[in-house]
Each structure stands twice: as structure tokens, then as C-alpha cells.
Image (tube, rainbow, N blue to C red; front, top):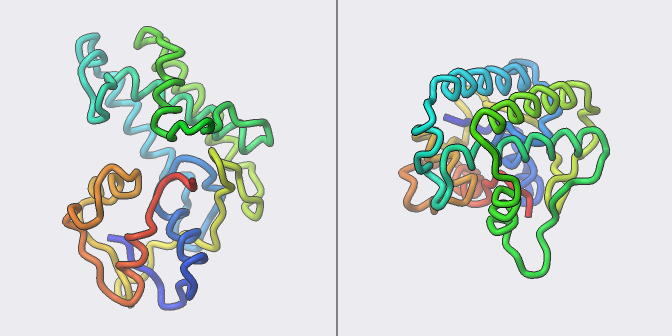
Length: 211
């Protein structure tokens, strides 16, 4: 459950940036709150994923993933490429991908994955190296400086799970929340429940990529 505090943003522009910050833990999360250490949470999630991936055999690496047309290896390669982009953004380097010429973000990501096929062991090692470097760079980043990501900078005014008695909230399965954020599931089909003056608006603008 994500609760929005009583002093949440009053404009849709502020709300978009604010919810964008709270919607995913990948790129540009240079932020700490009083109650939540964001980077420790991100590291814990990545550590858990690493344990899962370490247990996969060759057949499982080659098996279809939840992303149509991609095997598990392709997904992890995409994660590695994304972490490398996080590192580039956090250190002020140029991002390696820029959607253009009418290509959608999905098409660009697919092109990048198809361009760098590799065995599972190499992909896994690349992701581990990239995610550690990206996390270190984010920990060292200036929390007041927006980080470039794909086509637009990511910024926000706060990260907040919020108090239990918040006026607005989104409740439901975390997986559905993430799929809505990644624009893989329409909010109306997610089973997520919104309450309060900002719940529905927050779910409507929720996204993991600022494009």
C-alpha cells in the first residue's frame, strides 16, 4: 500500500513528478526520507533478485519471460543495460539510448537487447557489475540534481510511503502496481483500489519512465 501524506502536491505537474519518484527503484533515486533509506531498499531488492538468478539453470535462462518475445536472459540483459544507463546519468555521461525517428521506447529497448546477445553467465555478470556501480553512483549523487533518463529528467519533491491515516491511498497487489507503472496494465484492469482526493489521479499518472 502506498499512502499519500496530507501535504501532498496540489498540482498535477507536482503530482506527476512526485509519484514518478515513488513508482520505481531503478534510475535516479538519489533521495532519503526521515523514515526510509531508499538505497538500502533498492540494494535489498537487487540482492534478492541476484539470489533467484543464481539458482537458474540453462533451460530456465532460455525460458520465455513475462515480456513478450524476450527470454529470461533478455530481461536480465535489459536490466544490465538500464543500470549502465543509470550509472551514465548519475555520473554526468551521455545516455546510450535516445528514442527517435518514430521508434517507441519499447522498440528501442528491444533493439538494444537484440544488438548485444550473450550467454547467460556473461549477462548475469554484466548485470551484477552494473547494478553495484549504479547503486554506488546514486548513493554519491546530489539529491537536488535531477538525473536525465531517456527523454526527460527525473526529479521529485519527496519519497514517502506515508502514514497509515493518509487522506489518499492506492492499495492492491504490488505486482499490479508495478505493471501499471511500466504501462503494461491499464489502471482499470489492475484491481488496484484508490481512495481520497489524490489516489485516482496518482494512479492515472503513475509511470516508471518520464517520456
